Length: 412
Image (spheres, rainbow, N blue to C red):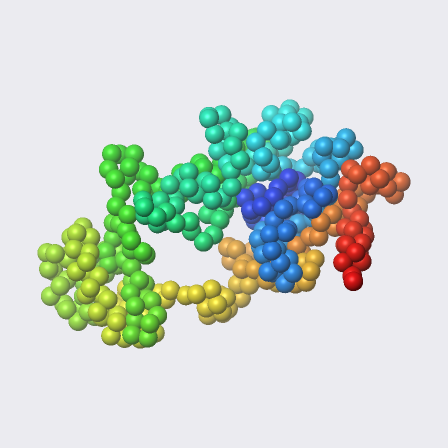
C-alpha cells in the first residue's frame, strides 16, 4: 500500500514537542524521518518521565516511526555525517535555540545554497528579526505572551490549558507548510526555506478575541466553559453530579431546545431569548432555565433528550473515560508500537482513509540507527569505530554499555 510520502527523506534536529510532532506526522504519511540527537542523552523529552510503560509519554507520543542518529554536530566528524545526510534529504527541520543553526552552518540560507531542492523548515519561538528573536521560547512562555492564558482564565487569574498548545500549533503549521513546499517543489523543482514561529501560530489560533481587540473593542471573557458570543453554551450539572455540555448555535436550535427539552415552547419567540444576541444579553436567565432542566435528569438521560431534540451536547469526561471512549474504541483509534522500554499506546491521528494505512514503526532508542545510517552513507566498520572513538557518534551499543555500567554501579 503506497503512502503519500513514501520515498521522502526527512532529517530533523529536534527536541521537546513542536518539531517532533511535525515530523511524526510526516512519518505517519510514510516519510522516512531520521532524528538527529545529541549523544549525551538525546532529545531531552526522553527524560521528562517514564509514564508510557517506561518511556517518556511526550517522547512516545511524538516520535514513533522514526530512526535515531546520535551525532555530535559540533564535532567535525559528526558535522560531516550530517552534511552527507542532508545531501540526500528532501526536508530538513529543526527547533534549535536561536542562533544555533547559523553557528553550525545549518541555517536555511546556507543549506539552500548547497542544496537547491531541499525544503528547510525552521521552528522558533518568536521568528527572525524583531526584539524577541533571540529569546528562548517554551510552551508556557508563548502561551502567556500570546494572550491565551488571559482568555482561558481571567485578567486577574490567567490559566494555562492542560496541553502544550503553542508547541502543537507550531508543529501543525510546520507539518502543513512542509507538505505545501513539497507540492510546490514537484511543480518547480525548487526547495525553499519555511519559518514557523510559535507566537505567529498562536496569534492565528487566537483569531476571535484578537480580531475583536484589533478593531477597537474589548472581547468579553466568558467564565468557565461558556462562550462570550453564544448562549446557551456551557456545562450544566445533571442530577447524578456529572456535567453535560449544551451548545445552541442558532435560533432554530433554540426553538427546539425550548420546546422539546425545556418544555417551554413560548420561550422560542420570547424577545428576550429569540435571537442569539438577546440570549447573550440575558445569559444568566438562559443558564438558569437550562440548568433547571438538566438538573432534573441524570446525565445519560439528559444527553439522550438533547440529542433527540437535535441539540449539540456531550459529557464532560475525565481522562479515564476518554481512554475507553466508546467512539474511539469502536473505530479502533489507538495504535500500539514498540519502544525502548516496552510497547506504548497512543491515539491515532487523522485522517481515516482506505487509500493507505499509517505505519506502526517503533519509538527509537537513542542512537539505535546510528550504525545502519552510517553504513548507508558508505562508512565501514573501521570508519565507524573511529567516529565512536572521537566522540562524534554514539551507537545503540554505546548506549547499552553505558546503561550496563550505570546499573552495575547502582547495585549494592
